[in-house]
Image (cartoon, rainbow, N blue to C red; front, side):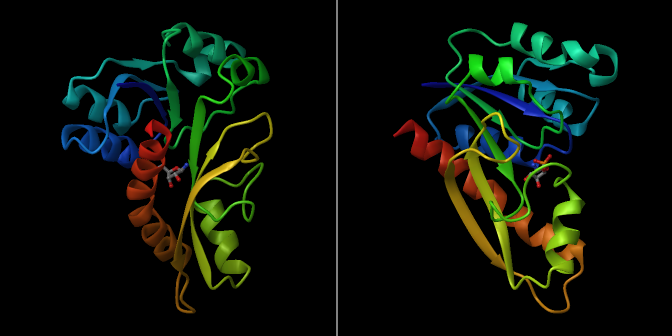
Length: 188
Ligand code: GRF
């Protein structure tokens, strides 16, 4: 059984997708813990599911954030999933967990990735560029923002009438199944 730690900063709908996939026996995995870098609903989702949850406040820990997060992760953890985690992991943390950290990003990488490309910034940029499609990408995390090998992508259309919020909703609607499918591929 795959031992997973999930890192969150927000609403945690991707975390919920993993929780549900495990309950429904779609994923043979266990979430060992959920770690957040700020108070967020993702922590509440962990509490409701009976999963150990920890807050490592980025404003308190600052430079120590990655060390504190690392201390909470058991050495036998198989996979660290960044599910809307907004802090940047340092190169020491990434090296220590090389090949075991994955992220979900709300665009078709390598398009609309990199520094500053998070949340609504991504969807605003997609609309401003007149893209006719967007989507999400699950990828390995390396020491370059959004730069690691791609595991799985799902496309969605972008309509001429779309506002960034419309693109965000459409992309989020495919993120959950994409993340679960990517983890399932890794289990295989
Ligand atoms: C998602 O759009 C994800 O791609 C991005 O942050 C958002 C997190 O959403 N990295 P949620 O917290 O899982 O609902």
